[in-house]
Length: 142
Image 1 (cartoon, rainbow, N blue to C red):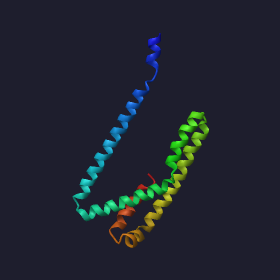
Image 2 (image 1 turned 120 degrees about the vertical axis):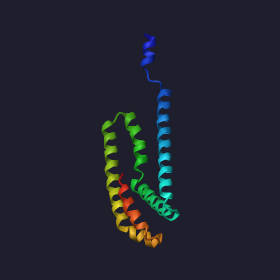
Image 3 (image 1 turned 90 degrees about the vertical axis):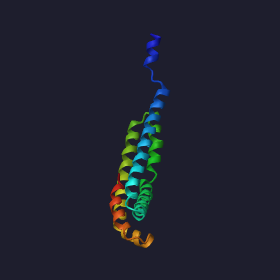
């Protein structure tokens, strides 16, 4: 009976190893895809690669601003509410953060789309960046 009780328990080290391998695989896949897209873009030439890199940098900065730190807040309150067994508060925190971040990211995406000409010409002095920012602005809500 004692043997059976031990086998039914979840080994925390097994869970940790499983989670670590999942993260490792995700990071490996992410880096591999990043190198592949960079190789494809670099074949077009250094000028085009620079414009795409500039566009991705602008999108990254705007995406960070659009999150309003809600990703850190959810990371803090989900374990807190789970530990306190307050599932209604947990659900409310998740839904509120998703709703707020969706609205804010849609506003930021629309603003970037509309202001892409100003940003490209006034700040970076690169007219070819306009189209890149307009296309990449659709990725902000995601």
